[in-house]
Length: 120
Image 1 (cartoon, rainbow, N blue to C red):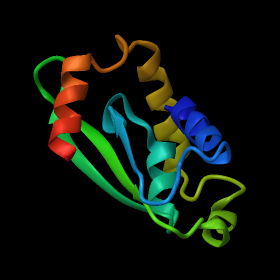
Image 2: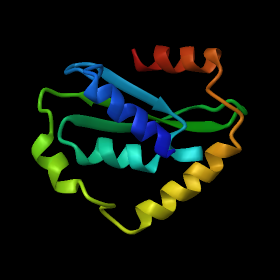
Image 3: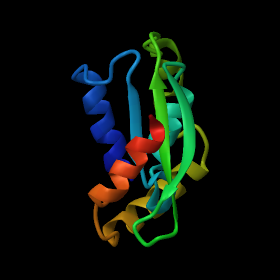
């Protein structure tokens, strides 16, 4: 949930998120990462797509695939700083964080490999 956005912002600051790379994050709708999704959606630096992927339980999961562009998005990012852009985001983030506390763990390597192969 919220930790994903914190860690992603650290990666941005460290220069790990570079133009022309692809960022893939699994389990973005359940348990969820609403703040990270909003960050990727609101910034002109990213072209975001949500994709269906196999879930560990054999069902359907969802991954965010964001292509990183050349624009750093600083002007637009400054405009969305200072609070939640819509009231429901705080509620979604809190629920997501609660679900992550009970989530069994990271995506198994076999499913991660399938996602990478699908994205090629």
